[in-house]
Figure 1 (cartoon, helix red, strand yellow):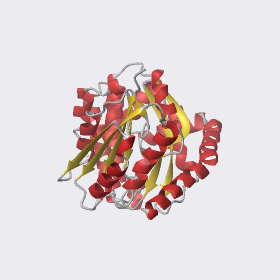
Figure 2: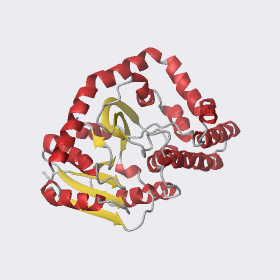
Figure 3: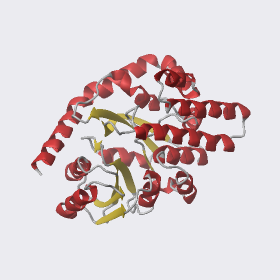
Length: 333
């Protein structure tokens, strides 16, 4: 029987100090859970000014036996993650694939169990956990409210929530056949919102899409001064402006006046989030996005709290152990 191909995509920009950890987390998956499969590795570097490409080349050379095929997409000049994202996705040969940013990690659980769910579903939404650059896992339950809300955002609510900029599906996996040229062209209108633009176009273009949520970490997000997860970082400010642009694009395509008005409010809310004044940024809580969150929280409060505790309490120690092990391995190297 011919073995299946699985593709890992890694995006990188000025992440020489941490990209090895991301690659090692992929190695962990292959060695522990990938028996009987073939693997493709696609690594993109968006014109890094540090030694990211040197680190990537060395790691691939040291681990070339893991992969049936490797593709290195190294740009001389920075072009933005959206262009790199689209170019990488067009090279995916695996029946299943996942995308990992160069400063994040795959969690220490079998990712192939998650992607196998695509035999039944079109999109599988997954949980994540966050950790600081020092390696400390963020364990406050409320941090993961937006994560577990994915369990309740379905059907028409999903379509509207995604259009309004709700950050659902950030770590989701999906069927490769959902990636059409129309989806690629939509993503290329933006610079930083590659995953949001991708899911927004997929959801709006496919009726009766089948979605499920798995309350187990899939990716571990690293929080740094320059990451999108850092509210005050320049990257986050640019990201908020891109979300406003995404809302404008949806508003132009929306036929119903009520939802055009909601998209207008969400667009302005995204712009407010990019404001340097803390008190101005508080106005973001008047956005439709926060009203959706509040409605879901009030109507599913007990289950949401239980899922938050399950996510953190069951997994933070194992996730922390993996991060520390990868860091020690890097220090030895």
